[in-house]
Image (cartoon, rainbow, N blue to C red):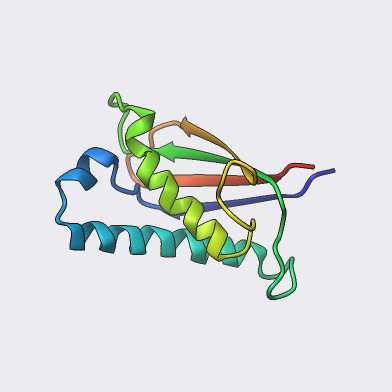
Length: 128
């Protein structure tokens, strides 16, 4: 039986189209903010499970589900940068050793709209 982690991050990270129009200082701020959000949420999910300094799993399947405020059409590849920020946070929290293809299978989905509370759900499943 494989282990799983599930957590929610409030808000929606900026997509590639928004990031491209940002000054590089603001882009760096957005990366730091969303990597930090992912790190904090992942750390909270794993801190009672693994001893400090150990890696939770060697290989994982990460499913990122975006719950936007509306049902407007969006391109999944526009959120590649946002997903990178989330994976960087998971690596910092030692959920996995690295965020390369050898350690991560990535699935990106659009969930049901949540007008009141747009958010990102992250499901991390250990792959054996």
